[in-house]
Image (cartoon, rainbow, N blue to C red; front, side, top):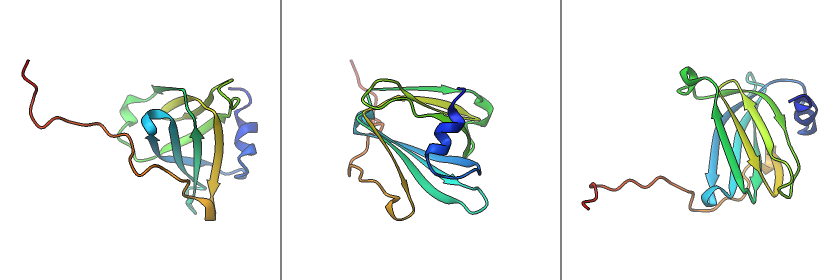
Length: 131
């Protein structure tokens, strides 16, 4: 990822580090919201919103750290919208690649992008099925 610093600067956040605090996947993977904080000392929240997603790939780099509440944001390549080239976000714990239709960033007043009332959930049957 040779150009990740350029793409991080395109987000208009400044030169300090960010942490990934949560990832929300809704509409069966068609929408991915990556919740972050900029400047861990001041904890200024923002959201990276990917819409019309077609492919999501996830790689865990550090299995010992998967219980951590936050991952250090190491870099981002925004790729190209309209499903031409995936965005790749790298942290110290995982890397996620998202082939998307559109991207936006939500900061300060516009922090909560519209989301569906229903998010994709893992459903667990109360009793095992008998075949």
